Every structure is written in structure tokens, then in C-alpha cells.
Length: 102
Image 1 (cartoon, rainbow, N blue to C red):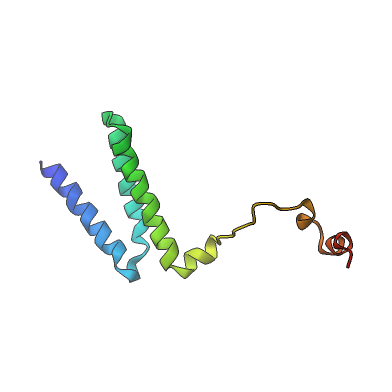
Image 2 (image 1 turned 90 degrees about the vertical axis):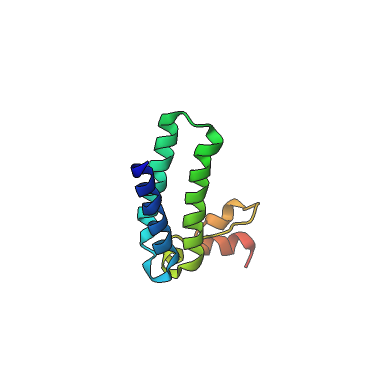
């Protein structure tokens, strides 16, 4: 029971430090913690739903960090493209003008 209590306290400390805005770099340690949790559940043969829970928590962790940190958004920009793109959108700008008839 001592090891489980220690791991629980470590998880709570990592989560508290992640929640504090000036210590965003703790997300990396928390990701490692969640990765260890996933590996443990895979090794123990836990159901897929239990194992995927920790993966979803990691995705939400980095999604929340992405939404609140401008530096991370600058590092990994989100671009949304339309559903239908024509091939001339990727052409050289001068060629694109000739294609469009300007």
C-alpha cells in the first residue's frame, strides 16, 4: 500500500504544479507519469477502456496547455483548410494569377 500511496501523492503534486500557470513545463513530467500508468495497465491486462482513459487524460492535458500557452501555439500552429482545395492553390503565386485570369 505504501508504493500506491507514494505514486498517488506524486500524481497529485504533478497535477497541482501543472495547474499553476507559471509551471507549465511540468506537463512533460505529468505526461511521463500518465505513460507509466498506461504501460502498467497494458502489462496487467486491464480492459481497453481503462487503459484508454489515461491516454484521453494526456490528450486533454496537452490540449489545455495548447489553449492557454501562446508559445506552444506559435510552435505548433493550427491551420484549418477548407474541405475542397484545388490543385492550383499549391502553385507558385505568379502561376496562380495566370490560372485565375488576372
